[in-house]
Length: 432
Image (tube, rainbow, N blue to C red):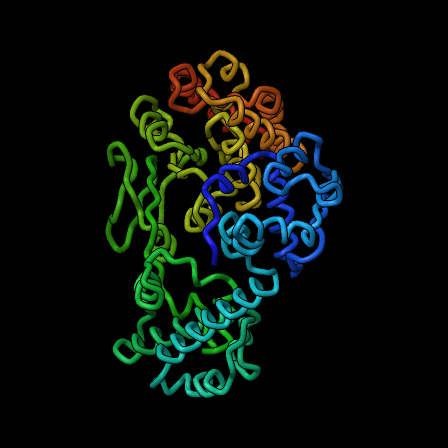
C-alpha cells in the first residue's frame, strides 16, 4: 500500500472533502464499491466545496459536480500522484466494514455469548439430581445467536433470564434443604449464593413463576425475608406472654419487627388514630416536641410505605389515618399510594398550600422544576387526593418544592399538628 501524503489528511478535514468522505463511507458500508460514482443526494456540494475537492482531484469537467463525484475518472488522477483510491480510503477512513460484515460479527458475538451462558448454567446445575431433566434438555439444545429455552423445560419460562435465574436458585435451595430441610432459606443468602449479589434483582416475578413451576412450591414458602422494623411512638403495648415493647414509654420511639408484631402475641392500647410521617427527623421531632403521641400512634413511613407496614396499619382502618409528607409531587404521590395500598381514606395533614407559599423553596435548576411541574400535572390528571389538589396546582404551575425540614413548614407542623389531628378525631366521632 502506497503512503498517502500528510497534506492529503489535512485537506480531508475541509468541508468539501469531509462531505465527500462521509458519503463514500456510507456507500461502502452499504456494500458499494469504489468504482463508479459517489452521489450527495439531497445535500449537494456548494461551489466552495467543489473547489476544495478540485484541489486534490483536479479540474476535469466531468469529475466533480454538485451532485456527484466520478470515481472512475478519479482513479487515474490519483495514480498519477503516486497512490490509489484504496490507499486514500485506508488513510482517511481506516477499515470500513459493510453492514453485512458488521451484522455477521454481531451475530457471531451473540452466539458466543449464548454458548458461554449455556455452558455456565450447565456447569452450575450439573450433579443436582432434581434438575437432571433440565440438564439433559439444555445439553441437547444447540446454542444460536438468539437465546432459547429447551422446549421441554419444566420452568415454562418464556425468556432466558428468568429460566437461568430459576435454575440457579433451585440449585442453591436444594443445597440448603440438604442441610436444613425444614427451614426456608434466607432470601439474601439465596441471592448472594446464586448470583453473587445479596441485593440482586434476578428473582423477578417471571423468575419466581419459573421457580414455582420447577419446584411446585411458591417463592415465599421457599424463602424467608429478614423482617423490617416499624418505628413508632404512642399508646401501644406489644405482649408475648409478657410485655415485649411499650411504645408509650420508649423515648423518643421504639422499633418493632413488622411481621412478628402481627403474628406473635397481641397488641393492646387505645389511641385516636394513626399518623404516618414521611421523614425521620420530622417524625422524631413530632414525638419529642408535641403531645400528639399521647393520643395518636405515630409511625415513620419512610417515604413510600413498605409491604410490611401496610398490613400493620390496615388493622386500624376503623380509626382516622393521617399522613404528613413533603410538599412536592412525591409527597402527594405517597398519600395517594397509601390510599391505594390500604384501601381506605388517608387524610393529609401538615400540607397546607398557604404554608407552602410562605416557606423557602428548594433551590433547583429550571430543568428540575420543569420535571416537578410535569409530575404534578400528571398527578392532577391521574391520581391526586381531592384535599391536595390546590397544592398540586401550585406545584404544577411553579415546580417549586418544600421539604418538611424547612423551618417555616417545620414550625407549622409542630404548632398546628395537634389541632389538625384533634379535628380529624372529632370528624370521626361525628361520623360514627
